[in-house]
Amino acid sequence: MSGILKKPRQKRVWYQALGALAINAWLPNWLTGQIFQGNIKGVCVPVLNCYSCPSALGACPIGAMQTLFGGLRFNLSIAEKKFGLYVLGLLGTVGSVVGRMPCGWLCPFGFLQELMHKIPTPKLRVPRFFSYFRYIFLAVLVVALPLLIVDQFGFGQTWFCKWVCPAGTLEAGIPLVLLNQGLRALVGFMYYWKVGLLALFLGWMTVSRRPFCRAVCPLGAILGLFNKGSLFRMAVDDEKCTLCNKCRNDCPVDIKIYESANSPDCVRCLKCMDSCKYGAISYEFLTKQEVAEDFRIEKAA
Amino acid sequence: MKRKLPWVLLAVFLVLMVAGLLLGEYRMVLEKAVTVCLDCIGIG
Image 1 (tube, helix red, strand yellow):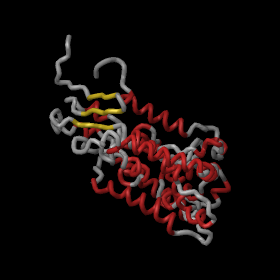
Image 2 (cartoon, rainbow over the protein chains, first blue to last red; image 1 turned 180 degrees about the vertical axis):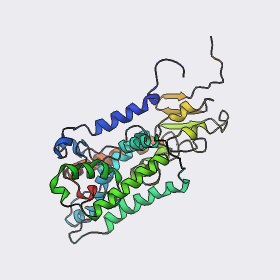
Image 3 (cartoon, each protein chain N blue to C red; image 1 turned 90 degrees about the vertical axis):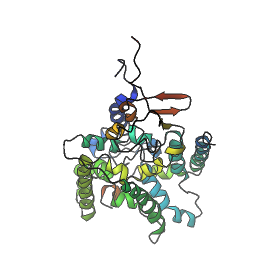
């Protein structure tokens, strides 16, 4: 590694830790078992972070999206014009600029998965076709069911939060139930289902790289769609790439960037730029361009 | 066209976001976010 000053990507773990803390900065609530209720909480964060986490300062975009879709039919029935444009627009804005980069740099649940994967255990690759499942979770649990299955008043449920989201269980379910006696009395099948699912995901993260992000996360599915059309772009120079696969071996989402530089699976952590010793990988953002260092070029003395 | 696409996307989604804000969707998200989500914690 040349130079004393590290590039931001070489300190990414600190960005991830600070991101997790900044998004969940209202720490006193961890003592009281309450949730933060300030007016800024309507701001959606571009990462999967449960708004019922005691210290969460912002709203989870996937929870907000389900709420807006779930309330759409009722709102239309009373001529209330609320279509979910705010959340969709916010995610599209972030995606148009950096694509899936928040997943790699800010997401607390992504960070947890990377930490868990450091536990020494036998490792397993996630089959590539699992990536399609996250679109199914998005289409079915986040969009279709909240819209289609409604109660007598016209309200749909937040299906993904209710049946799947392990981030909600970890960040909100377990702490709130531990801290609130009233909630403890309500624990039943659903709670044990979600805790069991969380345990499964925690186990999966130790053996596979960011499996939730790749196979389940509906937010990753949305932001990933922008990777090919965002202002921030990755590129691979085919002439320099030797297909050594070092980038894939170091990649937190196990992708072959040399096959698709702006794959929807890529979380844009830029780790591959340090892995590549041949200067084959580069990124471009607005007027800034950086190319991985080519270690074959002899340095001037 | 490839160079213009991100700017077009950005403009479209910014307009959508502002439209959502003008329609009062922020308040709706806020109301949900400041209430303990029983579905999220496995009790709903």
